[in-house]
Image 1 (cartoon, rainbow, N blue to C red):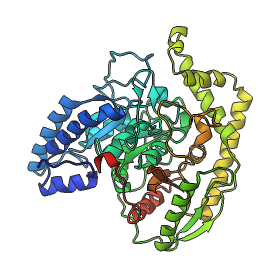
Image 2: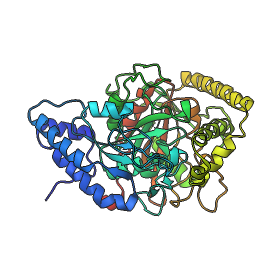
Image 3: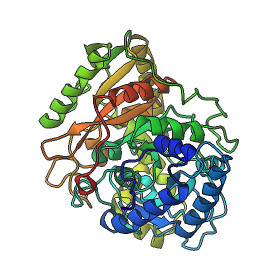
Image 4: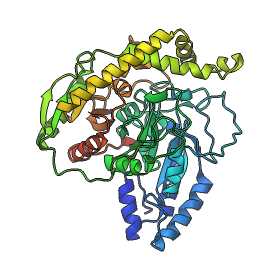
Length: 466
């Protein structure tokens, strides 16, 4: 029987390449075959780089046979989000307003770093138009669906990457997160993803959402995300915000346990309504921190809902896209995006500067909080995945996507590292995410805690491929 790789991790694949028990050709061919089978069901990819990927896999196999891999990811199939420039592949931003004929001649820093490490880019993954919302559908590529139930959304804006990671259509996937866009789909699809501290992973061109936007990995395990960050989080002089920082050693192994760690557990941040089955699943997961030796304190971080601050900055950023489009192009936009972009026009300079000040105050407050606690733990999402093709759960009281993502966007304001780790299934058999937040620049605490928790909370696999 032909071997398939629905649950293989990148760490495992590299070990097998070294042993000679797996060829990059076999792995890439299997991924491409499963993309052909599964992508029509979920619409995770905007394009597939099939011919080039097979050619690169053949060359990688020859290097491994000669024991001369070209880099730390040689032969590993990866995907890139449709918002990220990728040489030779279309970057359409999910929008009909973008040119269909390119040219696609430049790699963004992430694409360049992954290629230089030997990774094989197998395709681009879907995003809502300009990455503007917490679900994934757009006027150009249609609706992306959740592998756990195709009637439901995988979340967004990195919904294509989340669906691809859940089905292991490629082993490493790039996401972006300006308000939860890595963590929302990771929670909804049962995968792991981390929004690293702002600046570790270079961005170019700059996001319209400016310093709210983080780039990071989406994978099946925390160890695979650490591996991907070891390549992604390298300086690039084109990034005008980060100042070419040098990050930690992402491959530092986790400690044996969490003895001496102080964990703050907040079930609702003091103001969020959380579905009861999600709350129970998260409560059950908290016990594992104690089993690992940590001291867990039930405490809220002490801030009120910063949604007005976030929306002021978010709406103002969305407005920038309108300035480049004529009236005919604006008429073709996702109506929801056009609405918030127009609302952004009403943001005054005084309001914008006030939001900047409020953001800095929240950042300082969380810095003080993390002097007392190594991690803040919350649910990732207060609700379960809902019907695909809707911006908010139908029949509810939410107006905007931000209204149902209250655990994610505060930590874009503060630029802290934050990850979603699957912690089981809700009453509908759908994934639940555990949200891990550390102090700024303390990304290894998130990654290490997640790797240890995976002893008790293993990766999830959608039932269709179980």
